[in-house]
View 1: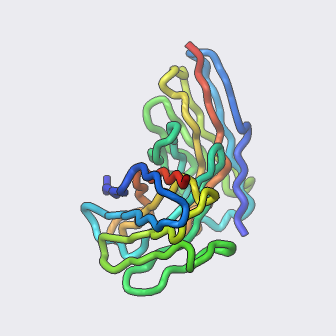
View 2 (view 1 turned 90 degrees about the vertical axis):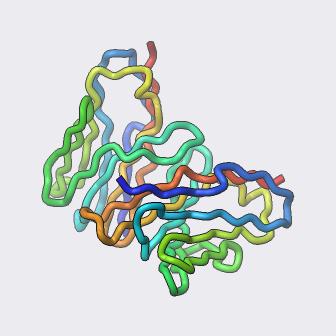
Length: 110
Length: 117
């Protein structure tokens, strides 16, 4: 059974810092990995999707990497802004279902 | 990208009543939809996989008689919480997979917050 762990569970940084969120998983037999953002009381916003054959994806200030051999993915956020404050979830797609990590609650202070 | 609409976004009901939540794929046909539940400050947990024209597949520990799922068309799946109780209060989110789309992506609805008094 796939287990997905996100570290840290919560993170508070001053505005402008670069930061890294971590996601680890136990089963490397995946189709893809997705990073989502969730604002309080809201649904999910897809940020980046990395296919199993890819190593990284970039969108604006976000960069996600995937290392299947070590069972890890990272989400790098450059020059963080207060508007980046949210919960970030990684999810592994093994074909028919997504398995989510516990999320990292990010607070970017002005 | 593809759009999934979920309705209602927020519902308050009395204990013992039933609540229906709708999940619609607006611009694609979804043979498979998924229902998740999220408790405060916790991650999403898959409840069931909804397949058009057949019975839903429930995850271990999810009561099928409590959470009725109907996927009667390629664009609509419904989740009915029967005889709701306060412990059923949660955030329910649906997603749909576009079989014609690339990359096996699931598209998520905005979620429904259920509060049972």
